[in-house]
Length: 364
Image 1 (cartoon, rainbow, N blue to C red):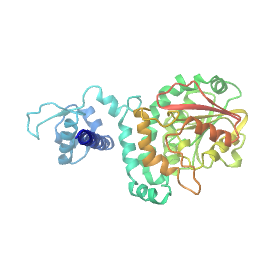
Image 2 (cartoon, rainbow, N blue to C red):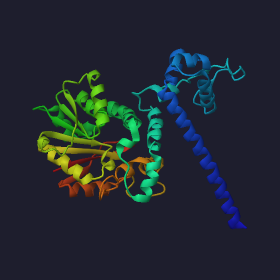
Image 3 (cartoon, rainbow, N blue to C red):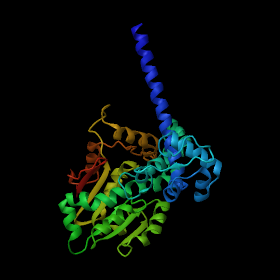
Image 4 (cartoon, rainbow, N blue to C red):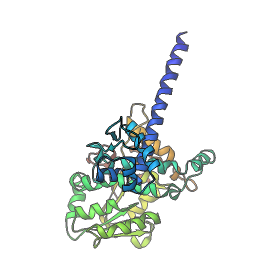
């Protein structure tokens, strides 16, 4: 009787939890619609609006706008100004404070990109299903533009707000070289849309930065964004392999942010970064901040990393023969092992403080 009762309680708890997860997933998917269709932006511009007014402002169908508004109000993301009004007359508003979360791309509290990343991770779900059976990987390109756009939008506030003020100054050997003479050259590998490359150039007026990535779509978008950056004279983006011998020995610093764990051959990647360095050069790796080993109490951030890993990071890291298959939850010991295999003499965890990432300074 006790066992059955305990099992019933656990069953009911799981039912309740999964129902709550379904609500959260639906909320995020609807946030994605509001973000990509400009519905939040329209509400912020026009103020409290009816479904017809929002539809006109945003250029969408009124019936779809009304259903979305009602869902958002039920979720507590928007406010129904007058609940007793008719469906056609009821107005909806973006609450104070929610605008920062949903619209302010410069804020560390901007969460709309999380919805975009969720959609991207689910896009090739049937390929992921097949990969579980075959052991194959899923190519990065199969995740579509939402993946690289969402990742760039999510990390942009980190680079813009923290890189110059907190992160790089915490590593004197890097900070001093980037401020020094002769002007330093930086290779930002796996740069994606180039937000980190631009942030480095803005923070250090003497340096030149080459953003390097093998994903053509990411580099094309980075090149589109560059002219408005204010540092276009000192930043260039290249769709090429960092292991290209023509690049050897050119750089004082090579960086790779939130990408090493996605690589099918991380040791080869680190070996390529080492080859980029001139005498006295260093490599800075920024990647997920994980617990030392698997632990059920590692926290919600690590739980989030596992979700991204199952759906995206591990599948892209399984592409190719004998791929490493690291996954997002890359432990500190794993990074040290990769660095040693790549020929680095030292792999030091830096004093950079971050809630999400751990930074490693690699010395040849």
